Length: 151
Ligand SMILES: [Fe+2]
Ligand SMILES: [Fe+2]
Image (tube, rainbow, N blue to C red; front, side, top):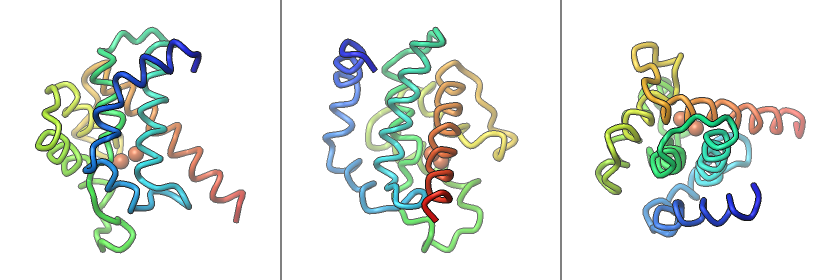
């Protein structure tokens, strides 16, 4: 990101990032050695950049909020014992995010559909949903590849 992007991203992320409730995500591992917090921050940044570079035109506040909170499910899925975590966590994250941060309906729906096509009946239905889904796939692939190459 260039300096202008960084400054504008900072304005949008500050309130969410500095909240003790989102800091909780530092306790949980997403993939390999990457915490859920780091993954969510990467997805927020990636979604913000894709939205600008590809001229998607989604509302930036929604893109950053849905990107950062898309995995705000607040448990360790490795020990939680839920083999259907992939299917269940989007709804849990959306509910937690709406409860704690009062998201717009578009942002909440984007969180619910971010695992599509795994969650077949919750397909992205807005610009913000598409950009968050794409950003999550890119960031997750990077984390998984890094883990494999590092053994
Ligand atoms: Fe997720
Ligand atoms: Fe994710």
